[in-house]
Image 1 (cartoon, each protein chain N blue to C red):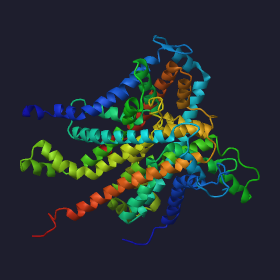
Image 2 (cartoon, rainbow over the protein chains, first blue to last red):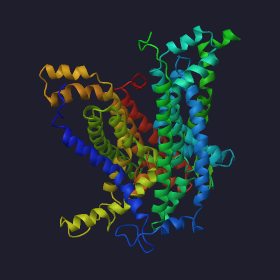
Image 3 (spheres, rainbow over the protein chains, first blue to last red):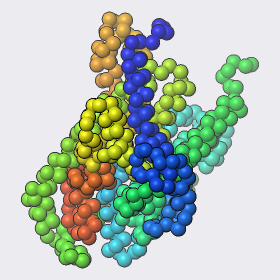
Image 4 (cartoon, rainbow over the protein chains, first blue to last red):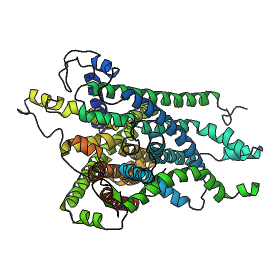
Length: 280
Length: 287
């Protein structure tokens, strides 16, 4: 094949570069601005460079409870992550065979994905309200977030099982493995890297979810709700400092997940079988 | 017992029961509740069960509703066109111009990482860019393009759509890239050998084969924009309205029945749009 770059490469590469700048530029800007000096404002110029606003975050806040909300968001993220992984794998396994009502269930999953978030928030809030239950981030908030993370987890599982080679399972069965042994020792290890992906979706989508928790988190805010509250009454770079910290935290989480997938794949490539490689 | 577990309907439902339970309680019930409450009445402080069409009557006869729905469609249409154009170009570059697989994965991840970070912070981060004394205005002034700061950069329809494009373009990039990667490269060589120009290959081979990805991306973008309330509120500085904001305003005033009626109409509208888009693609086949 011709190794020369086609003419369209250069304008498209430039366009792609601009797109990345568009994606990351604003985030980088607030990262820089969060180091504003104590007299600096919400925009350039920088009036000195300091850690003043980060320091401010660790002081007693005039409004809200940032660290409490961070702890709640973190705990909720972990709950949603574990539930999403378990329920998506079970759902993915279920959908490998057609069962009565599987079509309806599939359309419900699609509905959960496309329904405006505020409807979930409003509906769940109304149910809890009218039945006299207290809305709380770990009950109503938890359930509402699952309607957003489960469809993503399930779509990933569909994609995984569509590409899954069933002969591995048949081999296990032929060797006398029970259905449960087949799942635990053959299927789950093979799909493990994808499960890390599902976990990444579960945690981050929950950690950042706003609209579905708006009316379902109760009086104790999650971090996105807290940040949203700050946008209306905080006019100092402290909000940039908070934004930068939680974005750095998100990047760390994403990095850990991606590194785990990478390590799993490497280990598999190294320790994998040499069957079919022609070694006799 | 063993025979029982060989029944695929039973094992299917056993495995799917947690999923079904979550969706029943947190998706189906809430929708039913909204439909029920949309017929209720409200006083200033409380809501009471009733069966009246007042909420719908008010909504369907108010000129504001029509205007707000038109505005919502405007946002959806403009955002859709922009995200489609940008998303297609980005996916095309990744799929056909980046030749090393490592680079392809790395650049693809760079495009998707923002999806896993906070939307609200990504919105806030436009303020120092677009504000009256922001980067955009000061740069344009120093270049001599404009004399006065532009007022329409922040808190306007422009900034709302900019934020939508910023937040949602990757919902186009991912599915389009996914379908592009599955295009058999020999089809393109065949078209090339048959004398097609680059442009003809694009319009006659690649775009038709990308249609499922384009449709899935469109469904995501259109539904996210139509159901949004927070981006419009924040980026327009509360100066523009869409249906989501109409609902959230009613909620803030504790007018739940009226919010519910608006929500029902929004849901019906969104489902109609998706129903139309789904006629062009079978999602289950495309995963």
